[in-house]
Length: 134
Image 1 (tube, rainbow, N blue to C red):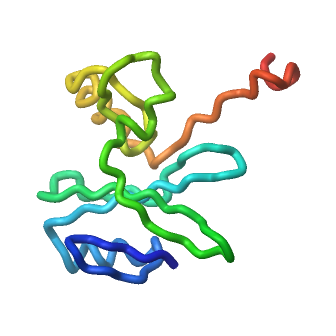
Image 2 (cartoon, rainbow, N blue to C red; image 1 turned 120 degrees about the vertical axis):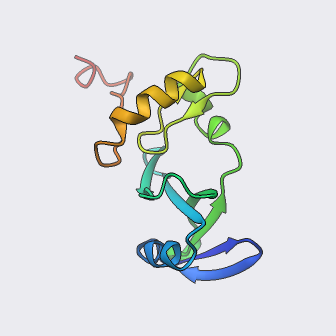
């Protein structure tokens, strides 16, 4: 369970409760990402099916001490995944697979194909492990 603060209101809820929250608030869509400390990767915990809502909120779920979870508002998806590209500027990030694009047009063209599939994560081989890089 994490503490969620939206529009100045605090809620204690689990990720599985977000669809109910979205149903009760038809102008908000919520996406939740989770940071896996062990693998140093970000993956999609919950992807909202409501892409056309007035307010789109991206949250990062962090695990603290004693297995407590906290939601943190992501103000810039581009900054969050900036290490995934050599581009030295803002990018447009797909919420479903976390892939960054340098132009809005490339991002929008890609979404049509990506959103046909469930949320996914790309895992790259470990460059230091010779067996994994073959």
